[in-house]
Length: 390
Picture 1: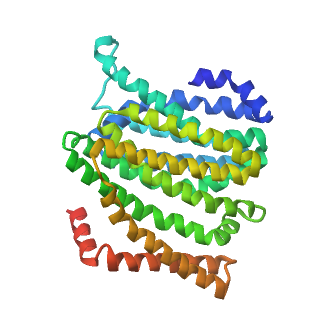
Picture 2: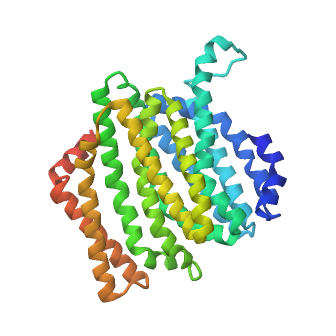
Picture 3: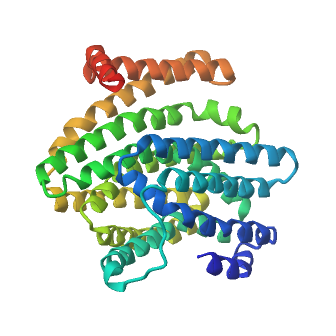
């Protein structure tokens, strides 16, 4: 991967018409070499349920990487500060992964094809799925960068990154815990289905209020976070909120599929999604520009979620009745949030720090109170706290 990306740098520069990409891409390609050394240790820590160690690795790596990025940005390295920050982060993580996981694996100078052929069969679909997932997930960015230019790509990227943030930060934590647990239930479809529904329920209750909160406060949040000149992203954010909702509902499938040893299903899922997405990107983008591409991504995300649910049905049996019984509550709670915050904005306005904080507090209170009234009682929360302390 390092060699391919390094050698393809001139083609990427030619496509985006941006010479500054030369040093960025060549430096970024080092990520593959550095991350390789710690990956096996990290997977073994997950497999052995060493969540404290994996949390320490993630936290320290993120803090070190973010600190390096900010420091280098202040030193005037501009976009290169992001790349050096990422390389610093993955270096710190790799060192910690080896340190915490060294008891589970010691490299040896031995190779036996008979021992690895089953892993290779599994891995071929894994790599294929990863490649298709990358193309499927970034085809919109690639299209915008080449057709509409890097300025339009900047607006689009800011909007997508802001809305996908809760999904990329919360869901991996939940799914890292869920994977080894589901893997042990793979021979019991009923237990597997119950656990999948619980994971889906937890993900929806955590992600929905954050995403809908962003939807209803976007006019206030964007100027505060990014300053003037980024108003173009507000309507894109409102589209991407629903992209993220569909994405987070499809996410638990990954854990379910890998626990069943069927990465081939993810390969076919991403292939089907890509077949739907590419013509939509072309047609919508040609007709409506950057907004059309955002709506194409939205339609493709909905299709991906629908395909995911078909695969879940195949693996664990009928689950939609339980899914609907769980999801209608967070949906209603979020609609109540929208009504409450919109009423505040209509009477008091939405500009400034004070109004933004007030909107967040109102939305949080509405969702929290409704959750305590109709989903989880204070007694249950206290019991859960006692269990965690124990």
